[in-house]
Image (cartoon, rainbow, N blue to C red; front, side, top):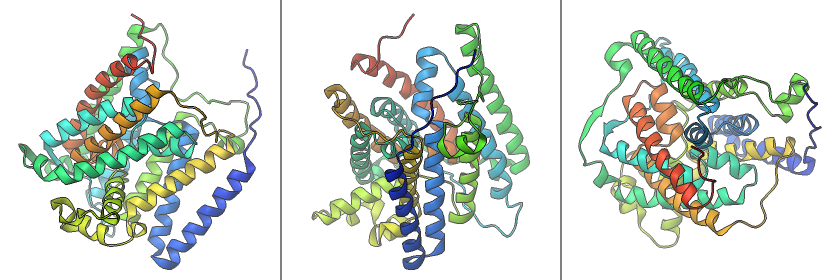
Length: 399
């Protein structure tokens, strides 16, 4: 017998304050920069609200697959990769001649392999991936704020070392769309994703007698409007929301959704402000990084979207009655957040992004570096899950 979900008690003061901040910042961006920055800020807010309402995180989903052999979140992630590919491939393949966009294609080399592996460990210790860190910070989780601070530190350090890592062996940039055309490339990628979906489904079926439904509503008795505004959302809504907002990002920004470049930029700016010379580092001395370092962070698309994502998550958490900053944090959690954040930041810079900028955007762009990131990041997560048990963040896994 299904019981009624408890009524949602929204935190109205926080919701109103956050909504006012969103409107004020968007107007400021439009007046002081350009309309595109305001739109990207609001798209970031939509992404933050989607992530929080759907509880859509990569780190927790992978951890549950590894520990419990439950594949619900992993299957939703695979579906997101598929929907994103369907939306992206025709655009990136220049089916629409009036739209000029850039794919997230990066070299397939040791830098990605090592970086994604390190990131996989870090996202389990830190408790979140790139997107997960931001939206949980927006939800008021203080431990994740610690992770974010050291995520920025790790990204900054890695940007100083990146030229050395990029000198390691690499096959160069390998794009399925450029090699085969967007139609055949999409068909091949869809087949690979179907196989991956079947594998994780088989893993769950082998351990359990039942398969958890992927799109079960979390509050079936609530009206559509209440669920849309107050949450929680079924995973299907999360997949659709993330894919649509990612497509809007591609069209408006000219590139897919990304997160972690901004962290290195913020760290480099802070380092420069306290007397350091980040501009002399090879990474920050030429190309777009040099331009970004020389101007306001509000002129950077990725930074603006990250700020919007945090505020969007705050608004969603307040509406859902979930905005609740933590009190006392255990020492083990602090240590894991510090170490995990450093690994997240360092790994993301080496791997050309996180689970969003490298995995989702890479695979969605038909870049083979995205698939390499997926494999190496998951292996790193296997180790990270074990380390969580050693640090007593999780109980031992049942045999």
